Image (cartoon, rainbow, N blue to C red; front, side, top):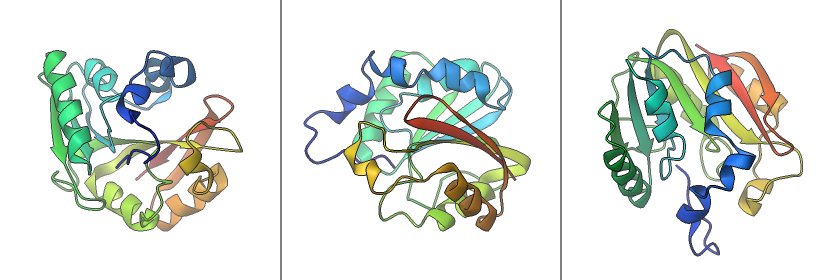
Length: 192
């Protein structure tokens, strides 16, 4: 789901850099999610697996599907999962609204910096994600807010919390609430 910017010579290194933890600490994010160690979860738009590894480690009795539309990202995430020796993760390619997961089979979905992407039919995407969830399943969304952020592509396409609330409603979700993660990012929880 995450497409590298054309002017960025090495987005994967930037996305996986240790400095990124100061901006977006995966363990802090997981602490705020309605996730259970037994859950079956999809990391949709996993990119190179920045959140995939921490999510899989948290899901000690659960299962994680890491999905992305970009084959390079799928291969990088797959290599990282193999190197981390995580047996509870499956890394797969997908289409923007078509996922190789049985409908109604997930407890949760995780979408980090995916919904804002230009060209994505946001409502259709969220409806497709909703279709993967069991009754009362959850969806955690991380997005840019305000004027901040170091991803210049996102400035034109960011989704503020109130816009996400309306988009979620149109897609059939209940918007549970949101919180700022820092000056440029927020996370929201949606329920089926």
